[in-house]
View 1: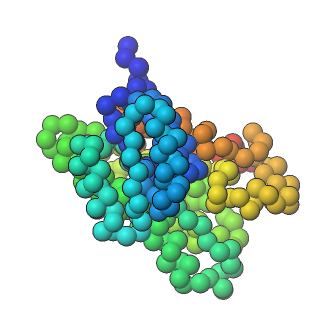
View 2 (view 1 turned 135 degrees about the vertical axis):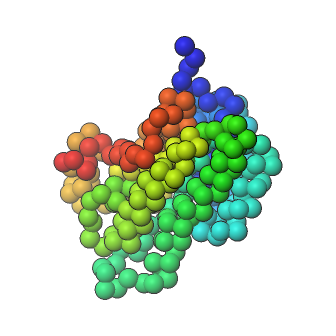
Length: 259
């Protein structure tokens, strides 16, 4: 039997792929043979991530793309297809957090920023990815995988985190709708909901003893996740092993949401 997890010949896009979970996923797919494109808004981080990914021996590229800008996403997709010829896997991972204010003090500019990246950015990225995949399907080459990175914040309540949680809940619902709409083209669409993971976004909490005592102590597997622990789910969802897996919300949180 052929290796179900061999990604040779496949092209993957990861937004926010220059760090954290995005880079962990991008590296995992490159290790299994995929050509990988990362989008990010920090040029230095893009360069550093590109150097790391290049060690895997596949074709890699990085581009400055603000996913909250619809035109930038369309331009980025056009450039990707011009350079790589196709797209098989799209991971809408780019995300931002909020200032932790209670509901009476929510700043509207903060709301617009978080919704712009976390919600509209996912829509733009997966929509433009699907546009290409549908055209390819109509030409006789169906299939493809779309993945949104949501969060356990879509599942459990957390005070002063309503904006972030709301965008992640919207992402899960949007993903399920896309799964139904695009299934006829053999395009599968799934959400991944990470739990507490080491990244730049969570750096302050990682260094906060009280957070470790009150929150991280409740993770049954104990401790924080590392970004590299999301490589496996990326490889699986990009591979032929997942061709009948769609519309799912895949929770990877060390058991936090069940305890």
